[in-house]
Amino acid sequence: MSDKDENFNERFLSEALPLISSYFSGAEVELGPQHVSADEEEDWGTEFGEFISLIKLRHALGCCSYLMTVTQEIEAGASHTTTLIRSRTSGVVRGRLDIPLYIAERASTRLLAKTYPIILLDESPNTPENQVAKQLMNEILQRFRRAPIPEATAEKRLSAEYSLLISRRLGQYPWAEVRGPSGGLRRTALEAKHRIAKRQTGNEPAYRRLVELVNRWLLEFEKAGPINNHDAVVKALLAFPSSLAFDDRIFEIWCLKELARAFESCGAVLIDGPTPLALNSVKPIYVFRHGERLVRIWFQKALNTEFAQWHYEGTKPLRGIPDITVENDGCLLLLDSKNRLADKGVRPEETYKMLGYFENFRPILIPPYGLVCFTSIDDFHRTLNAKGGGTLALMSAHPFDPQSCKLAEHLRNSVGDWLASI
Image 1: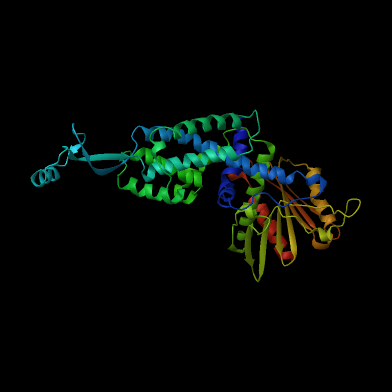
Image 2 (image 1 turned 45 degrees about the vertical axis):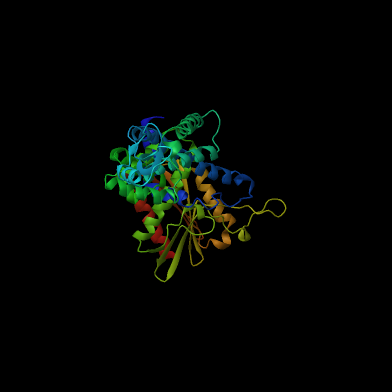
């Protein structure tokens, strides 16, 4: 992959990362999208599920590479707790003689078998910070085992190597003697953070880096800091060559975020959202209030097939899933994102796909209004107008330079026109 290709992916991924991270917070929810029965869209659900699995796998690989270094630093000076144990011994005294008890016993009793009271020091590595490290290793290991990783790939080879390293490490000191925490990883990391702040670990630099890594793993951007966490996670996710489908999903989510910003710039007030993307089939990602109306922005939601005008032979309707659907009192705005470079010419294939939505769903698209977002280095922007009413705006985002990107301006103008028209 060239440096230019990396920059191409990096801009959209970095800016969309807070929204993408909602897939992690929605882990309890089934992440698979709604089923689509149209023949040409049969593989859409599989592709989107693969994207979610792949982005989680890349995230785990990036975190694990750092975890291996951190655990080595911890093992060089692992923290421990010390407990006093009172016991007895005969013959050679092992431990420290409990002198007060020994004098008291000698004065009051005569033991037939001579034994001595002793005090032993028991050191255990079962501290909150070591529990955090062990729990993080286990969680990463489980993600490797659950991920459907294609064979003969760099991800497969590296995840297998890391799995072996983690398994061996967990069977050695100190990790073999560390018990699991009673609470979750976030709660235990908070306890460890307090001990680090009080300098109770004896190895503060290594454990401080461990807590920072936990923030990366949990994708807590606000707590970890935008530079410290954002850049590290982006580089981890781009550590391997990405497929076109992976890049397309990133661009779709980035366009979703930019469209929400366009509504805010047009005076709409956010009242709910962003909803975790894992809930995209049951809830809108954003809900705005514009005047007296509610604007709902849906991601990857199928249009209502009751209004489909075209059917396959028999009864099966031709279905459609725009990347983004905006609802406002029954009026719809459709947006499709196409991670393809466009210039001053046109891209008929993507344009006609949106026009196909207009034709198939005429009853609910009155008037039809759609947006198609491409990428371009020369500010590609054109508008198509229908004779009987209807608008299709074609626009582009600069893939490398945010300063040169005029997509926000084009989106704001189009959203303003659509709001005014309804």
